[in-house]
Length: 181
Image 1 (cartoon, one colour):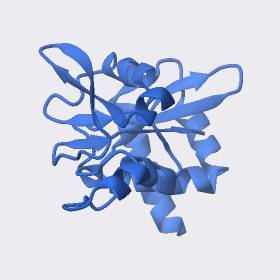
Image 2 (tube, rainbow, N blue to C red):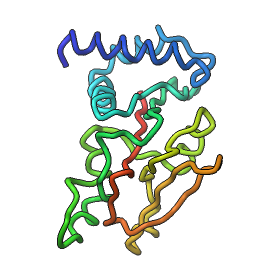
Image 3 (cartoon, rainbow, N blue to C red):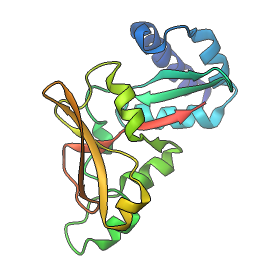
Image 4 (cartoon, rainbow, N blue to C red):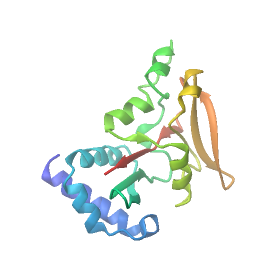
């Protein structure tokens, strides 16, 4: 990442951090920035999250290990990560009308993790997300083995977890990612 790109990304992240202090109580931006500046890989992942519409922000700090957690905080599932089936096996199983890719592969390419159900529910405590869209979440192996995958959204003031065939894809379903720095 070029210095100008890094500086622009850090300015964007700093502005988002300042505008959403309730997401990261007890944390200070200079500490977060110092950690990011020591991690070019994390900056590349955050740039990919930003470029696909994720609006990543700090939502947690593991005090034991000092690890910051960034999560996609866009109001709706990131626009640049929609119309994807769940994973490569699901994509390969489609005989026609294949989507452009899969959530799991795209996340891996960005070096981020799909949110777990617990992470998704924690995110929803910080605001209202996915009121019009839905997001694939990390699916337990026993469900995936049977051909299913899980996704979440927020409707009627509640967070819902649903299932679908992993090969399905919709224009309003994407995925949210998490990055540990």
